[in-house]
Length: 248
Ligand code: ADP
Image (cartoon, rainbow, N blue to C red):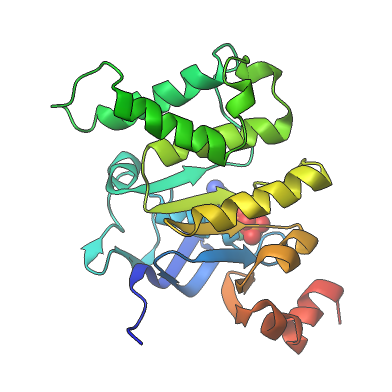
């Protein structure tokens, strides 16, 4: 069996804010096509790790390697995005006044601007790509709806669809199911599993029931450091993880 390919590797990352170490010597390796959950108590450094990967925060030391040998540690946010690492923040950010279809078209044109040689008009192939994402995010019947009139969960899915049209190899998601109904949460878990067949997905998550239902591999952070990594079963059986979550 060939070794799965490592797509992203954070090595020995330390982040300091005014001398306070928000992340300390943290390493994280992601295999291509995996769905990884990053969990841990508030303040553990999870969001800061995503910020480091997408170039929003510079680590004091350590490095981030993309696709084996592309060092992205000191690249700018837009360069990292163009390389194919997409970040989604907790609150949905869609254009409320535009339709679902227009939001998706806009996201696709944004992608195209990277490839300056391509035409600005939508081709049949473009439409097919949009339709594919509409089916995937379950919004085909609401193509003409104003994005502002969608439910909170639907807005999150639309934004995920917009990200996917930019064809990232890695998606970084910050608490995607926060504020969702139980049904929306389950649909989101299925959506993320589906996406992870083609892309690599990292999810920072507080909703432990969601993690239990959908995580195969979990990374637990505590006080800026790696506490435990493994399958959900391995993580749940770890005494130190229980201590951190339940108190001593
Ligand atoms: P998590 O996402 O696990 O809840 P964060 O990565 O948001 O944790 O934060 C880790 C620690 O770093 C926290 O103690 C937080 O207060 C601190 N922190 C995060 N961002 C900043 C910042 N910009 N300036 C100062 N401290 C920060």
